Length: 232
Image (cartoon, rainbow, N blue to C red; front, side, top):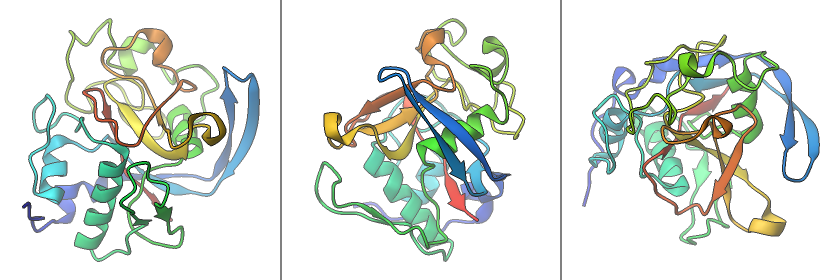
């Protein structure tokens, strides 16, 4: 049995959430050849993915997967990420965003959009924040902004070792993929959830602002993590 440790703002990196202004983003589905424009309210997003050190501080459980304390946590499922959000919210006296069920497909999971706690970004929030106003496929030169197959040395790296985007966000591309809230395409893929951003072992094509991937919410793998969001 694990026990959640006492958590402070400095330990959790709450001060590392950055303000992202309201705006809109065009989401393109390259496979279906469709696009839609999504208007977004302002929100906050973690400057970096959640690290192994912070994950252990909140959950009381040493994380699986590779890397040192400043590396992004990996080997976390979509459901694990939501539990982390709820635990951190409770530790800091905030109202948790998620009601979690026991169904492995997470079909009973609900998001309380009036809650003031921590959550995962939506797919639209993620891409809008990643682009930070840039219409290009990346917010900067590939090697300058991302850890990918060509420059990672075949391993995970600490967060914030590449250049940030115009919003001050690090590692939006490369190093680890990041879970988002959204279902990918429920009519075709059922409960599969979206993740974005590309990872340390991906070719350049996978490390683009518009690149989408998906998997079952129980997936745990060594290049998939998450970052925090919060409504304002």
